[in-house]
Amino acid sequence: MDYPVWQLWGINGGLLVAIISVLHVFVAQFAVGGGFLLVHAATRAERAGSAEATFWVKRFTRFFLLLSMVFGGVSGVGIWVIISLISPAATSLLVHRFVYAWATEWVFFLGEIVALLVYYYGFGKMRFEDHRNVGLLYGLFAYLSLFMINGIITFMLTPGAWMQTQGFWDGFFNPTFWPSLLFRSALCAMLSGLFGLVWASLIDDERARELMTGVTRLWALVPIPFMAVGAWWYLGALPAPQLEMVLRRTADIRPFLEAFPWVLAALMVGGLAFFTRLPSGARVPVAALLLVLGLCQVGTFEWVRETGRRPWIVHGVIWSNGITPEAGAKSDLEGMLKVARWSGVKQVAEANMHEAGRELWQVQCANCHGLGAPMIDILPRIANRPLTGVEALITGQGALQGYMPPFVGTPAERRALATYLVNERDARRH
Image 1: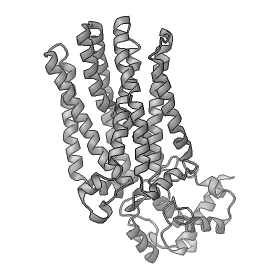
Image 2: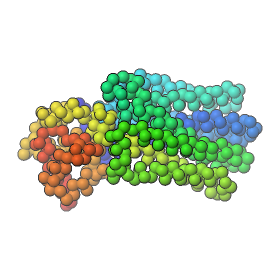
Image 3: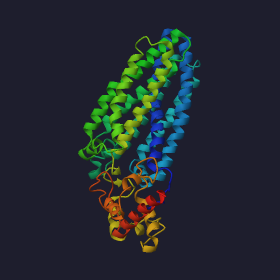
Image 4: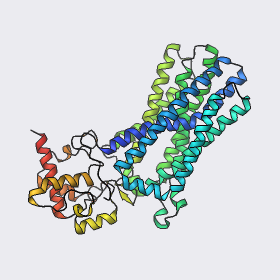
């Protein structure tokens, strides 16, 4: 409420965050597991005396460097930009509460960049043992970055004892920290194996291809049971309100929650296929399909985790529309339009009912809902409701619809929001 609202009409902010973050996590977690995979593959190639396999490792390292450092770095900045625009209050809270954690993670990230550059340009120019140690150093820095980020993002769902103590370590080592770390560690390893399988299947030399496929298929398959254990542990660690939100299976959660075990099973079956005599023409398509399934696995987990926070961005601290309970209580007394610093309308009147409702929509609703937008479109939900019915629906937020934050503001503002929604619905019918 202390920040301007970024107005989006064709798409809502939550969908933009989802697209950017899922793609970033897909690549970033490949970057974490890939460092150790590269060292493993290079060691196997060295012991086998295969120049072709060593050359493949170098080429794969180049691809790894470009994808993780360029796309991963740019999409990481993209996440900071988009969350700062969509949820500035929550972004500010995370920065201020975990400023030293962020600073530590950025030191680790700098270490990743330096180590990976040295590793790539050190092929054939360093003793094998020294080169391997640089690769291990990269893997360590990457995993420590994951360790730090994991503490912050799990805090958003399960702040735990931090709610009482406000202590850094209580927030960082929160109830879902360790199960999430196990799941993400296994996911990182699996993704590195899936990327590696695609590249290994393209090797022309049969001996080198079999050697590198043998390495990468292990990385693709072995982590899957650990992912299943991590997901089960994660659910068990959720406090009752968050667990109920996940298992409630609302319309936009249900497909992802139900898809998760099936995608995991498909990955297991596909990984096992590479332990059989697959026809040479089937290897690349199967490996590529498994990589797409890996992206689906990332997407299903991240979607369920994000929606499990409802109606909060940071559980118990900031609602999903960026309003705190304290600001909400003040708005109930004084009026949301008056309290919202950047609102262009400060008082509801008959002459400005539509404009006031539009301001309220932007401040309280647009973070999650769209008007004709592809995610959580509000129009079907009010399609057959009269003005009083829409107003009753808004009144039920936070009570009858516990997965939504309550409407905050005066009765006149509630009527203005309902009027705006009805007007927009009727205008789009003609």
